[in-house]
Length: 169
Image (cartoon, rainbow, N blue to C red):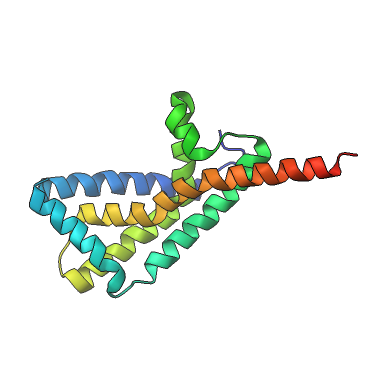
């Protein structure tokens, strides 16, 4: 359970993000399927995005996710919790709650990513690939959070332990 209660706005944004992710994935599967050509196009388009217009989002979104991971990782360390990704991978009883925490923390960033990729697709690609919107948004917003929160927690736990040892007479 999160130590800090989520605001109603955070909960609504997280729910909307989750619903949009599922809806866009289903829509993408219905419209384009899962052929090898579709997979090639998706990854080719994703690789081309950082060189095109709106490339700033490839810095903006991961930085925002890193800030959230820093805040939550420090909070985890202060509470003596196990690192985030480690808990998700090894503790099936806590993994759903921890994933929910991550979605609450990154919901706004994911929504921003979906909107920004939608604009990018309309302006640059002149088409709509809903699955790509989800992939790009999660790669830029949730994956950095997922990868950074645990190491931040471990680093801060080490720092807290070191400072506690330094103060002991």
